[in-house]
Amino acid sequence: MPARPAAVAGAAPATGKTGKKSAPAKSQSAPVAPAPAGPTTTPPTSLLVPDSGGYSNANVAQLEQIILRTLEDFNVPARIVHVESGPTVTQFGVEPLYVERAGQKRKVRVNRIVSLSNDLALALAAPAVRIEAPVPGRPYVGIEVPNPDKSLVSLRGLVESPEMRKGGALALPLGRNTAGAAVVMDLTRAPHLLIAGATGSGKSVCINSVVTGLLMQHGPETLRFIMVDPKMVELPGYNGIPHLYGKVITDVEQVMGALTWLLLQMDDRYQLFRDLNVRNIDAYNTIMRKQKSGQPLPYLVLVIDELADLMRTAAEDIERQICRLAQMARATGIHLVLATQRPSTDVITGLIKANFPTYLVCSDQPD
Image 1 (tube, helix red, strand yellow):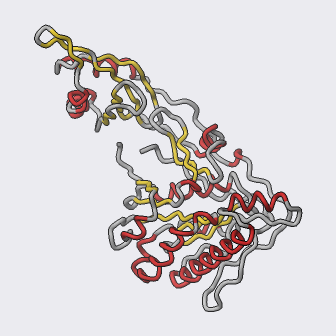
Image 2 (image 1 turned 45 degrees about the vertical axis):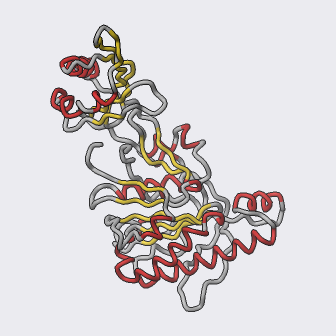
Image 3 (image 1 turned 90 degrees about the vertical axis):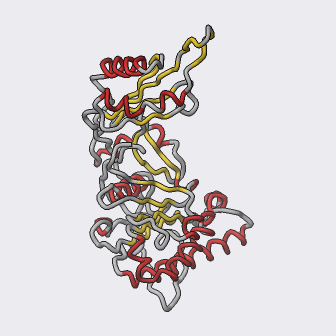
């Protein structure tokens, strides 16, 4: 699990043209878009906290000696061939060597190194040691030792990283890996994201990072949000940004209207795709940009900060509409980001789980 990015909210770019939207059902309340007001520019990254720079561990040489000595004590000869320091852990690449048995040299089994995780943690005086055996695509075993001092992972460093620039249409800055490289995911390929974790583990921090990262890339003419926050304290800070339809929904009774409006948007977009004989929003927008009078469609992202509260009030209706959106809305550019502190079967039902192939588990414990 990568380190949690720092949350920086409230950066609102200037307003721009809105995408075409259809009329909602009369019996349901629908979001209202703010009036357009001129060309759009994305906010500068100078609004965010600058990155702290590179990551290093001053005790690398000492830790290397302890790891090799501990392995040797258990008759597991090895050598360290690679070291990577990240914001929270340092990974030591350990290559197994050979032992002599009955006059023959045989390489040490990887399982023998894995079984020594508790002994390594004791020798290193570390709270926990994670062993990745083997590291994907590398010819060694990774032993990850927590750093004594954790480094801040700033959102600005992620937004300015090369991985973010080539991350896709809706690149999400998630954090940094054990080597300190940026971890970025394209929401259009997810195509929906489910965030789970206990209270205080960083779900809201992750949502703020995701939303702010998208705001730093898109104006309101290419990206729109619908936000639902039953807790009423996390997302209302985004009220007033031009990307947001209406205001952040805090009343559970209004959620059904917003979901119904999204379903109408999905059906209208499929009708437009059928008229032009295209399959998805990318092909449609390509044709619209070639036409002088064409109006490209913006991406729509639904953010729900606490799904469990909604499922307790109207589980059957909420599940039905979320499942239909998750099943069919991907091609129309509508994506869902849901967060819950209770990923049990009565909240994340089988249908919802089947349509959310991408999970993000937040934890304040070291991996």
